Amino acid sequence: MRTQRKQLIGYIEHGNIAPENIPAALLVAKITPDSSAWLLFINRLLLWIGALALAVSCLFFIAYNWTELGRFSKFALIELLMAAVISLYCKQANDCMLSKVSLLLASLLVGVLLAFYGQTYQTGADHWLLFFYWALFILPWAIMARFPAIWIFWLALLNFSIVLYYNSFHGLFFIAFSSDQGLLWSLFIFNTVSLIALEYLAIPFHWLTPRWPVRLVSIASGATITSLVLQSIFARHTGDFLAAIVWLAFITALFFIYRKIKNDLFMLAAACLSGIVVITTFTARHLLDNFQEASFLFLAIMVVALGSSAAIWLKKVHKENL
Image (cartoon, rainbow, N blue to C red; front, side, top):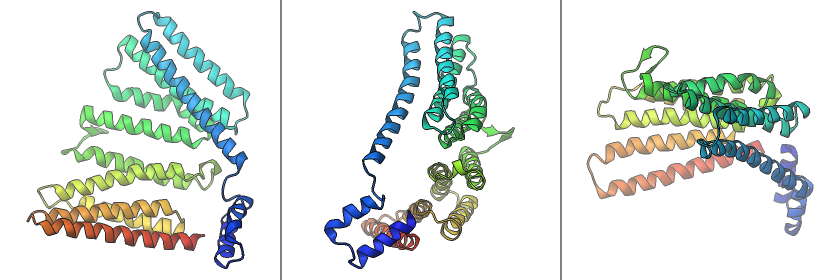
């Protein structure tokens, strides 16, 4: 596809294809989606919406009829729906989209079952346990499905459990943190390790080759370390350089890996955005101490200059990768 795209762009730039024939050429080269591709997209979109609607409807149906339904009726409804979804997975081929979505729906219903179990028997004193056990119970299904969406959902559950655990005990693994930044550090470390694991496992496991799971995890990792840098910039004390050092190392690693080793324009754009935010915040922190009207004009010009420079460089990188 990349070779066809590059060849077609070369033909267009040299005038070998008339302007009125460019849309047809894009369609023939399968660069733009045709009717069958749109039909496949709509079918999968409706499948996803239907699966999510089914899980949410089960949750709200039992919650709305909480007093009318008996204890065993609630659990029987959820368990029967889970059994039907699992049987649908067993009847379908492992690589088809319906089987993977059905297993994801079953993973969602596990959370519904755990929530009603905790509400019925009042076992939800530690909220983090709900998400942790939820992730623990669906781990075999995530391994069986070989579906990136389930693994992203599994990582999201662990992120929620980390947040709730930290809010309850103000630390992780029996280590208490002295500041509120400990939660951000914990999330950054966890998501960075997950990012490295996804990139490493994508080599032997072809079903992890889609880039969107890695990009989602990188957003979580980059957002946390950027937040730590912003907090250190606005902190009154100036001795906290750890966040800045880690952020600089993280951004440098992103630029090196996704520019030299594995080309990924999204990662480079995210790194540029993080750099623009940190540089602008650092400059604003020192300029606005002595409030002057010209400071806002300077910051606006700087943001435009940094954004334009990043856009020009990213466009250049994109042309090199065509």
